Length: 401
Image (cartoon, rainbow, N blue to C red):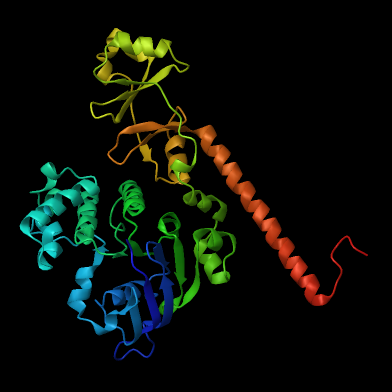
């Protein structure tokens, strides 16, 4: 489980600089929540993060983790208790994947058997086959795989706190979406306290239980839930940072698991064309989803695709272009559905196994409900403001005489 974190009047000044890099920041973070620090480049968000594990020593103020003042303990011991993941993974290139993950558990004195078991557990947890990746070196991994190993290493010694400094900023957008979903899944299982730095407000909405929007010198402009920031930004600075399309950004707040995931006819790549045709004739759809031998979505297959000229059923039809997990946002799902000519997307588990499908109609209904709820909330907020104004001025509410 996670630990509470308290920042008390935290400041950082550098010699020769007349203004502090971080100026009098106070913040309370609850155990097990994900707090995202977001703000313009150079505002001090990474400096604030690094002071939590004292990679940067604060000039003044205190940091408490579970009520322990960590500014008074050995910084090396502190860092072994706080997981840390950075952009481009930060893996040691001369060490194998297993050696990178085992680094901190070995430092804190775990037995060889315990370390070996933990490495396999961590690889499995982040969706990498231990038998395949155990002995590889970082240069043999894709960018997304390296980031997964970086997260596994940060979690290896089971720390209550995980600090993440723009960990997904150096990968392509598709891989970034998958890594964000993976982090959401891990957090759903592990309940760590995560402090996450990003400059991408969409990423902050997707990942954060609460978001701290920071001005220059890490001064907190607003610290609240994503819903509250989107619907009631504190001032023009926060509104400008949220940007246009706040209603659409709300789609990051609802997950695929929150909408109806429908069943759909499926067949296996090993099924005969006759079996596939029988499945097509026996259902309400003129298409089936072909699953590979691991139960993962493989191809969309129509009746005409089984003509003799099209070859074996395993290679017929149209490849599945994309899938979403249950932790994906409605925005992710909507994008996947819109690029699919059939207007649907397959939903998978964390190992890629097929769960069901969501279609355009389901997503649009959810979008309409979200927008209607926002309109109702905005109307209520305006009504409350009008009543407060009338109370201050002594005016009768409209409709009374």
